[in-house]
Every structure is written in structure tokens, then in C-alpha cells.
Length: 234
Length: 234
DNA sequence: TAGATTGTTAATCGATTAACAATC
DNA sequence: TAGATTGTTAATCGATTAACAATC
Image (cartoon, rainbow over all chains, first blue to last red; front, top):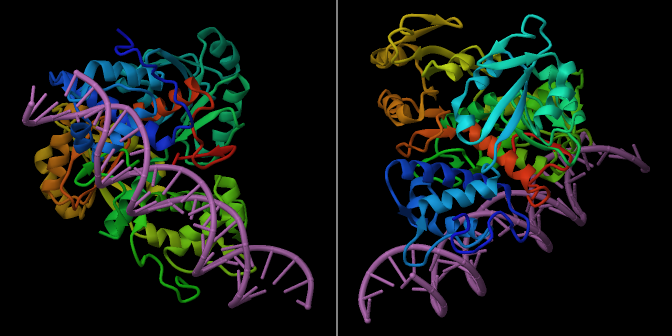
């Protein structure tokens, strides 16, 4: 059921480029749409065409992790979804801590897309006394002092930073101190972390700058992947 | 003043890789922090060290666009900031339209980081009659029917999509129809656009998946750039 | 001058693509 | 069987890095 053809999933032989992992997420998202549309199988060609990649790239990406397809047939959507979720680690639930409950933080507390992929914000933290003790979008807001206790009892391994830039490094340090292993940072600032803690940064202004560059310099930017359409710039 | 050494900025000879433009934004952000800290000059070495790149990469990236440094000295922060802003197109104001005023849309309407870099959301659109006509974070919410008029009178060239996945393609089509040239899409779905319209996609669940992969497969992911720290994964 | 640092070239490294035997 | 599509290898392409003359 979980290993349809007896191949191991999620145990890459060597190092996996970040770009590959990112495309894996795109394949997963696309597969979930295909299933919702009633499709049973797909192919590297179809997947690539929709996302703007070559079929060879799709197959190569998947080959990092195992053999998931059937020659002559393609890929069974439900099987490939299960395999990719296992690889990405989203076949399990990830309880998370949110630091910073401003505009953006509140929006993220209510964002449905997280839960659908296995992520759940179980506690929020803020230094504003007015917010402490309140419940926002069903999530309790605590003082940062409670971080050690809450992370321990909830086995929290991932954190989100949505504080102002000036407070981001301190927030990261607090998360690291309680053993958090991965941080999604929305503050527009470079954060320094120990080697063993993973960081993904999302700077919304920077995303817009990529767009203004492309629009202001029409055609002088090298299209890195997608022909007509794309998502998540790679 | 704007061209300190008589070199052209923002006119790359050939095609510029997307990754280069992304790093340009990181350099800009770092330079702005340096200036705030009172630094007058910096070097490719310092810039690279903080961001986790080699000094050669920093110099090569900048060399796509001109000569901005002084041998033996380095880069004057204020000059380089001006040059990069010109390259990215953020030396001008970008009025924008926001489609979708849910949780995320509202948060983005109030996000200060946009304005600081020259982006301003001047109008929002939603299909919910309860929201139409209201003013959120100082931004008027209109019916989509008003899109052509509002984009024309405000010379809007960039749009943000923050609607549910199922409505995203239609929202994109509407923006394209009124001549928008660049779209920042937050809906977790692949969007198809004509060649000439630029797209940047931000899928928050996918960002978290990159993190869960790294945490669940500790050490088997190839660190693409930064050694100890980094941001905006490239 | 000596020291520092740029811009750029050539070498290296890594990622993408084309092609094809194996398979269903 | 013929047709389709995989997994994988080798070839191509592109991006990063090291090295260094030129410059301040």
C-alpha cells in the first residue's frame, strides 16, 4: 500500500539539490489537483508541460528518491502523492510555533493551506501584553517566557517568525534555544543560525522586486524554467 | 550623482539569470541595513560573508549591470543602493491592485514592507458584497467590475492575487485582460499566463514543505548557498 | 609604496536535457 | 504485437569559483 513496488521512498542516495525539493512540492500540488479532477494516472510529460519543465527533468527529480512510475503507463497519482508526501515529511503532522502576532502573523494563523498539508500552528507568542492570553483564530497567544514549556509539551520542531525586522534575530535565537529545528522567516532581514537549524526566508518585498525588475526590463531576464506559465519561480 | 562613475546601470548586455536578480534584492536589503548601522562603504567580501555567498559571486552578479565599485576601496553603500534600486525598478513607485481580501489579502494590505520599497496597493477587489465598498487599511475595496477603470486611472501595472485556489486563474485572467504586466500569486495553484505577463508565485505551504524535508531528512539536503545562515533560499 | 579590492577571464563544478534500452 | 513511457546514461549547457592584472 505505501510501497507499491517495493522501492524505498525518502532515502536519497546522495545530496539533493534544493531546487529538486522545490519542484517536488510543485509536483505534489499538481498531482493533488489532478486527483481532484478525477485523473488516475499522469506522465512526466503531462506534469512537466503544466509546470513548465521538461519530461526528463520530472523523471530525473523523482529518480533521486526511487522508482515510482510504470514504463508504458506513467505514474499513478495516488501512489506518487503518497510517495512525495513521505519524502517531504508531510505524511506526518507538524505542530508549529508562531512568533509575532501582527498583521501577517494573524493572517497566517488563519491560513487554511497549512493544515491541508499537515502543518498546524499550535501556539503563538507575542511581546505585546494586550495580545498575550488572547485566542486568535483558535490559537492561544502566550508570552515568550512560555516558549520552552509549550514547545516541549507539544513536541514543536518548526517555528514561524512574523515579527518586525529588528526583533527577528532575537526571535530566532529564542526558537533555537528551545530546540526548534526549522524556521520560516517572514521578517525582511538576514538571520544567522547554527548549522543544524534550517531556515527558509520569505521576503514579500523581494518577491515584488523580482516582478518589477522583469516588468521594467521586459525581455532582458532569462526565463529560468517555465515557458508560458509557472509558479514559485524556482 | 546617480551615475557616480559614468557607468550605465540597469542595462544588462545579455540575459540575466533569475537567481542573480534575487541576490540583487538580498544585496539591497543588506546594504540598507548597513547604512542604518552607519556604514559608509562595504566590500564584496563582507556582503558575501553575511549572506553566505562568495565574494566572487557578489562581484560577478553586479558586473552584469555595470561597474559600481572602487578597486582598493569597495562599494559606497549609498551609491550601490541607488544603482540596485534603479536596476530592480524600485527607484520609482509601483501602484498595485490586490485581488482577494481574505485573511491573507487584508494582512498584505497592511504590510509596511511594501511601501518602504516603492510598492503601494492603491485598490483592492473582492467578490464578497459585504466587503465591497469598505475601506481596509486605508485601501478601498471594489467590485471586480471596476477593475478596468481603476487600473487605467491609477496606471496599475502589477497585481497581487490572494484569492482561494479555485478562483486564482480567473483572477489572473481578469488582471491580464486589463493590461497588468506582472502578478504576484499567493494562491496555491499553477496559473497559466500569456508569455508577456510575468508571474511570481509564493506558496506558503510549499515553503514549509522545504523545511519539513530538511528537518525530516537531516543532512541529506545539499546546502545550495549559505554556510551557517541564509535567507530566501535562492 | 604597500595593502586592499575591484572587474574579468579561465577553470571547475553542477544541473538540465537528449537519447535510448528496458518495460509494460 | 505496436505504442507509450519509464529510468538512466552521456552530452550539453549554464552557473559558480579561483585566480590575477588593473586600480585606487
